Length: 547
Figure 1 (spheres, rainbow, N blue to C red):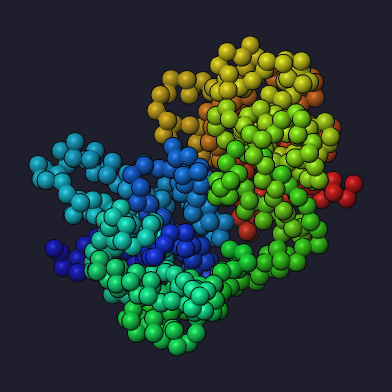
Figure 2 (cartoon, one colour; figure 1 turned 90 degrees about the vertical axis):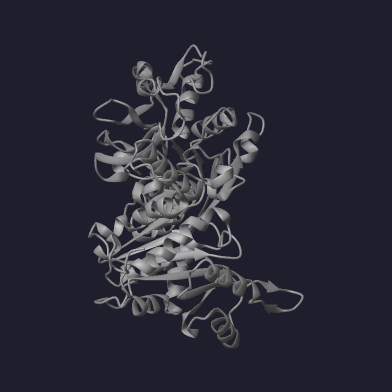
């Protein structure tokens, strides 16, 4: 093994923070990572976050939302874990393919190299070949010179067999990096036993023991808890887990994920990190804009109810970015947005009025496949005819196009070829460049594309400009052979790709708010920059509620 500091790890000047989790999943490693990054950013440091996922899929693009929540898409077209959405929403800095790496991607790269003969006949093994590739990816962002701190979240829980190569890679990296260049934050659970009336530390002790048995000693423990941690219990955790008592951080359940940075500030998490990494030059954290956002979020003067019509509504994470975009837009409008989830399977002509009764706006969500499609058609018909504010995203736009064809253009069998390959009026059809593609993963129209908005349109007024760039994830598009008929009947193609002519936005000029986009605006909404289409949609809902 090489001498310490003699590897390429020593070439970077960035500091590295590794975040692991124990006891159970869904403790909030992503939120803790994003919150710490926000605090360091507020002190003037350049920070990025990356997620290493232990599953063997190359990316989550082929995963059912019920399996993994939403698939988040970056500007460069990477299909990634939804935690990258949290990173962008907190930091207001775009992520990329380099910010999300899976076991599948690691093994795919190593096996490809082996087939090319890159290992000179050696036996390819988890150690060193897989771990070397993991370490290379972990260091990549830190070697660009763009960041002072790189936070790496390790997916899964300590003890999971899938996570072992990542944990071993962190162990090796900590040995190779210079002194005070890295630290490990371990997020764990302090469960409350109602019968005993107390918090229990034993799961945390066992979790740290498992981490140490893998060669990693945590520098900081973040303890997720429903109740405050008594000082005596902090001392006990510190003693048995071999950490300093002021490195035992309390993480209480919060009323909003956006409160967590301030809770971590109160616990001095950023100060502990700065001291342990010997970071130089950090100013007092400037969180005034963040506090202003929280003030507007928690003290609304208006309230609206928005129906979210989708096929995965049982799992909130399936539409995570949409729900968070409503939080941002609500705060911008000083309005509490209550999202009422409606399963599109359950909607039909007989019950649509009942299920949408009392809502101030309707968003038809993205999705794939035929299930729930006809229910979405009924939702769009109802809001179009009753002047209820409407917002369609991706498939939501395609549904709006199909509904208009059937009920306004007089084409009763109009559909998308995704739903009905034999439709006589394919108003939505597969993109030409998609027709020869057989593989499912990573083959859609992905990433950021330009769009020109028609001057004076609702969309252009919302953005305040005519040229925009938005992220896409789709295979089907508006069929331009029908465009003239749509515009003559009153549906305006208000946004188009300047190179391909692809219709990106449709709207009804004579409706209070009827706008739908082929892209995913929710993916670019952040605390600092709420998405303008969501902001205007919420504003239209407020006006509708007031009558």
